Image 1 (cartoon, helix red, strand yellow):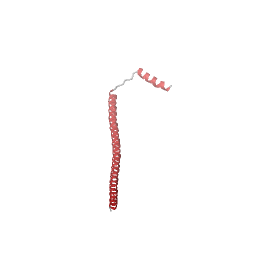
Image 2 (cartoon, rainbow, N blue to C red; image 1 turned 30 degrees about the vertical axis):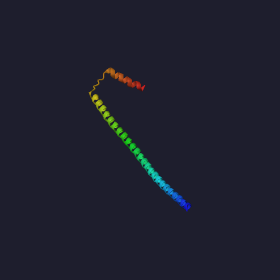
Image 3 (tube, one colour; image 1 turned 60 degrees about the horizontal axis):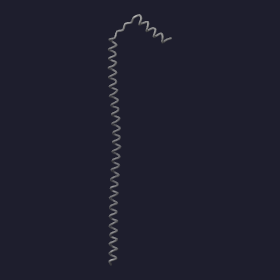
Image 4 (cartoon, helix red, strand yellow; image 1 turned 120 degrees about the vertical axis):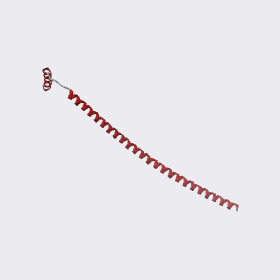
Length: 111
């Protein structure tokens, strides 16, 4: 009888070991799936962060270009205005010698 009991105990032990193995494998599979989901989530977050950074960078460049263009336009207008004011205040008088020199310069380009 002892031999039969030993065999039954052995079988019961094997059954318990198998149940524990199955339970551990189930926990491993669940944890693996959880980690894979976290990885997918992190990858999606990373893609979103990269896209947002690219968009912010483009916007920053566009804004900077626009500000520079506006500043350049303002400076150009100011330079033109100063030049116009200076041109209005300049008086120029031709004399005979100056007219002769100008005509010689112009005619030398025609030859």
